[in-house]
Image: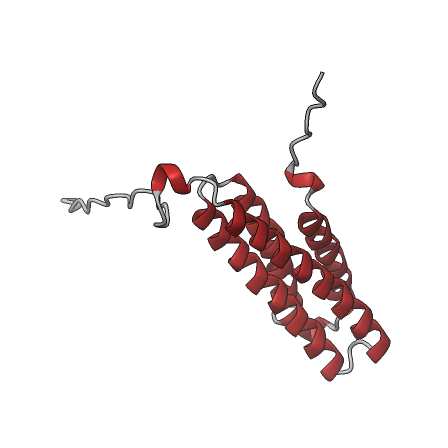
Length: 150
């Protein structure tokens, strides 16, 4: 009897696991930043790290390979933004060089894994036969403006 291949789930993807570690570390870093950064660097690093995780998840849930890649590119941009926030934290002397390097390595590991996943998605081209090589888009909602006569 043939052994069944286990299908990967979102939770088993290495890039997703690493992005979640980045998220955890980004929130820890944001906690230790000074109060004057509460609505600036703290908020930015938390949103970028969260966006990285959520865009990987959303891309994983899409069918067509070009649609998937679009979200994975957004995740890559968000993780790179986290990297910039880490470097800004070191530049502003909120963290020391060794902490910066540790966090940079984690983010770079997540980015390398994500790039590998993007290569895999591009290679398999799921959905290409059914939809071709155009990006699948959802219908644009029609908005109707109704005048208020009151």
